Image 1: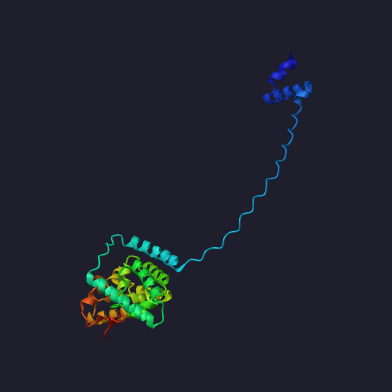
Image 2: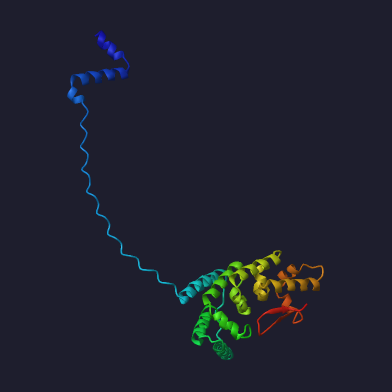
Length: 270
């Protein structure tokens, strides 16, 4: 009894260890750890995947496909920034006849240069798809239109550059007013855009000025126009005047700005 009372008064952990010790000594077979299960049989090696057929060489992108891709990018950007663009107005009978005469003169110029007239006409039709009613001999000479027709995809890329430089301006109208911009290299277009933005850095909306007077996309023309405004309105900021009324140069009449039908360039008289 004394021994049992001591066991009962011992801590629980001690009693458990004693009980476990007594049970393990009385039944060694029960106390033995169970034998480890045999390892599973190794899975058979997976069959090697069948060799893939050789890839066919990539088909080179055609000029027409490159044009369509560049056109899609320019068109998407234009719709992003000009959401309320009106539908094209149907051409009048006079405009239809003018376009026909313009195409005939351009093809005649291509013939004189030894160019393929069919290819020139096809490329110019692509221009009409990209920019309806763009071709106009009042804005650029026939020989320049022939030159422009030789790289339709490059012209579409230049439209994207202009849209990136002046995102809220309708660059289609800008190019329609001054198509000779597309004859410049992409580097010059980017450089001119940076110079224009620097000259108009004090303006609140550069794109509105460029859209109102597309000829100001040329930094030389812009600098001369700003100098003219500064001389005409002494004591006033020419950039602020241009921002308040972008048409001010045109409203001053031919004494300052004139449009050359042969070359499509704006000139200023000093």
